[in-house]
Structure formats: C-alpha cells, structure tokens
Amino acid sequence: MPTHHLPEPAAARPQRTISKSLLFLSITLAIVVGFVAGTRSNELLGAIAPLVGIKVATGTINLDRVQTTYQQLKANYDGTLDEQALIDGASRGLVAAADDRYTVFMDTKEAGDFDKDLSGEIGGGIGVELGMRNEQPTVIRVLEGNPAEKAGLKAGDTIVTINGQSAVGWDTAKVAEKIRGEVGTTVKIVVDRSGEAKEFTITRATVNNPSVQSRVENGIGIMKLTRFDENTSTLAKKAAESFKQQNVKGVILDLRGNGGGYVEAAQAVAGLWIDNKVIVSERTNGKVTDELKSTSNPVLKGIKTIVLVDGDSASASEIVAGALQDYGVATLVGQKTFGKGTVQKVLDLGAGTKLKVTVARWYTPKGKNITKDGIKPDVSATLTKEDINAGIDPQLDAALKLFL
Image 1: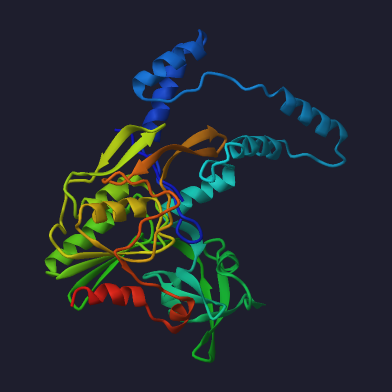
Image 2 (image 1 turned 120 degrees about the vertical axis):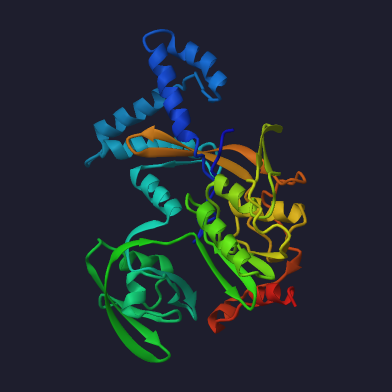
C-alpha cells in the first residue's frame, strides 16, 4: 500500500504528511528507466509505470520562452548571474503556477530544513521551546537532557539579550536564529526571571527534540505530540504502555500546535485506540484511491480519552482526531482545527532539491473532507494570549474536568 506524508510544522505553519514509500518507488523507477534507456523511453515508461504504481507524465512543455528570457537576461543584465539560482527560480515559478499552497519547490537549503524539521534535528542549539508572553520572547519549555537544562534556564525566563544584543521586540524566529549556531560554540544569554537579571553562557550541542512527551497527573495520562515523525510511533506506544502499567483512569492526547508529519505515524497513534480500522480514505479526482487503516495495537482501547486540538492542529493531527471522534472513542476539546484535507508526496528532483506535491484529498471514516472547515471539537474551550501570559491552560483544565 503506498504511503504518503501529509502536509505542513508545528511552529508557524501546519505541517506535512509524507510518503515513506518514496525510496522504493525511486528505486523501481530507476530500474525501469535503466531498462528502457536507449529505446522509446517515454512511451515504454508511460506503459510500464502504472504497473508498478508510479504516476508518470511523458509529455513535455514548451520552454522556448524561458530560454529566450534567459538569453536576453544574460546578454543585457548589468551584474553577475547565479545560474543555479536561475534554474531554481524557474522551477519554483513553474510549481507556483499550479496555485496550490501545499505544492511547492524546495531548493537545497529548503529541502534540508524540511528534512530536519520532520526529524526534530535542529542542529546546534541549547534545547528550549520559545513563545511570546507579554510581547517578549520567553522560554516555554526546557528540553530534558539538553544544554539549557544543564545551564539552569527555566520555563518562564524572558529573553533579554543574546550575545550582547537586545532581544526586546524580537519574535521567536529571530531569537531562535540568534541562539542556534555551530555545535561546540557558545552563546551568552541574559534572561529576566521574576524581575532579576540572570546571565548564562551555554555551549551549543546537537539538540534532538522528541516528538512525544508524557506524564501522569492525578491518575490521568497526558501525552503531548508535537509532530508525527519517524520516532513518534515508538515513543507513543511506549507512553501508552506506561499509562497502562500505571492503571490510569483516563488519557489526554494533546495535539495542539501539531502541524502533521508522516501518515504512517498517524496510523500507529490511532492504532493505540482503534484496532485495524480505516482511519482515512484518499481520493484523487473524486475516486477512492486508497484506504489507510490503523495498526493493530489498541493498548488504550476502552480507556476514556480526551483529545486537545486548536487552530494549529493540522493534517496528520486532524486524521487522528477525526478518526477517534468518528469512531466515538474520544471526546475532542479545544478549538476548531486548521483544515488541511490534502495529501502531499515529496519527490527528489536531483541536486538536493525536492518537490512537495498534492496527490490526493483525504476523508475521515464518516466521509468528511475537512479542508477549510476543520474539525469542530465536542467541547469548546479557548486559550487566550492573556491565559498564556498568566501561565494557565483553560483547555487542559476543561479536559481534566471531564474525568471528574
């Protein structure tokens, strides 16, 4: 069964759901191309590809105007032209003309960042999650076992300066950019902690941010998923088994801010509650092309479950939330989800570039495509900016009340 990766990250964008069958398909395609090379390659490839489940376009597009544009630009431009940048720009424009926000061309750097984003490998850093509180970049969470924890940074610390530069007015993206650097180098950070300035010199290290965090509070197992990556299945199963061993009376699955990831991970997570049932169907041009089932490992089956969602819960998050809601095994609490009902596949274009392209639309078990509309929670609860600044979580509180 072909697998896909859904769409668009956590932090500021809804994430992706990705095809892990791409390697196999690429190898198969290479074999086919090798076989037909030197003959009627286009015609033979077009005939053979469907037999091995590959979509192939054998036509060509007239690029004479692009060549003319390039020649005139090269002949007349007063400056130096980067030919690789021109090639990437032409490819980017071609893909952008499809007018689909989720179908994008990625150059070498973007493709590398994309892979790191899904793997959780952010390179040299200190291991903190940042957010905005009272208009200032603030440490929201310190990742266990990373440099920031060892140095003594704490959740709630407000970033004041980085390497002597004032961080006042910076957004979290700029703060993260300034904090990151080569592994082994140091960064000096001054924070405000309850009105007291504290200075830290922290050595950057390779930071791996696990996609699953879990804890048990008052007999309730709380599992937070930040994305659906290649390790999510294993980590979620481990957390679920721990909950079971501790005889929790209920589980909260927190998918807030989770923009998606690998659909295989979504199948495994849903499979902790749903035993080998269709959790999503894929349709291309209105026809069902695939039905993806949960795995057969319902460790948490029968345990009362609440799923927390918000406007940044997208793609794979919506697949899991929608399936658990449709099968009646969980109650959704929070705010309407993002509304990402399309499936993307990531294809290598060579030279380190990639194409992320929409290949299908997905539907919940009850046949709903949530594009634009999102999934509505069973119990509405909001989390305001003021709540975040005050360090309170009304959505989590609303979920916990359902176990009383």
